[in-house]
View 1 (cartoon, rainbow, N blue to C red):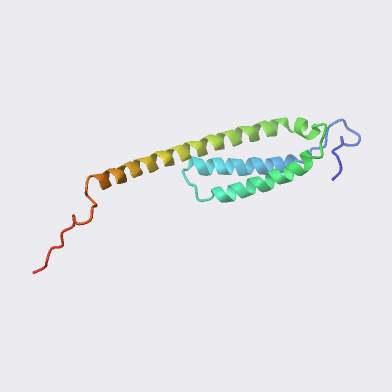
View 2: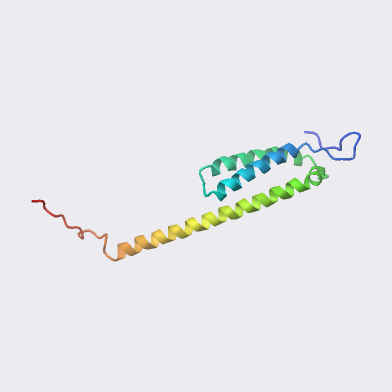
Amino acid sequence: MEPVEPNEGTSEPVTVIKPLLQNLTKILEEERDHLTSGRVDKLGIFARQKMQALSQINMFVGNDPTHQLAKANSEELGQIRGLLDDNMHRLEFRIKAIGEITETIQAAAKEAESDGTYQPGNFKISKRR
C-alpha cells in the first residue's frame, strides 16, 4: 500500500478512512446501546466487528508516517475514544456485578455445607402406607 499523500490540487489530506471510522462509530454505538439495555448475547459479535474495523483502519494508519489521516479525522477519533471508554466502563461494571453475585452464591453454598443441611444421612425417607 502506498503512503498517504495530500490530495492533488488541495492542501487537505486524504480522508480515505472516514467511512471506516464511521463504521466503527456505528458498531460502538450499537454495542453501547446493547450494554445499556442489559443484554450480553451479542458481545462476541461486537468484538469480531470491532477487530475487523480496527484492522481495516490500521492498514491505512500504518502507511501514514506524517499522521495526516489522524489530523484530518481528529473529531471522529475523539468520538471513537469516548465510545470505547464508555463501553469499557459498562463492561467493567457488569463484570464487577457478576463477581459480587458469584461471591454471594459461593458464600451461601459454603454456609449451607457447614450447617449440616446437605450432609449425607440427613434425609429421611418416609414410607408410604
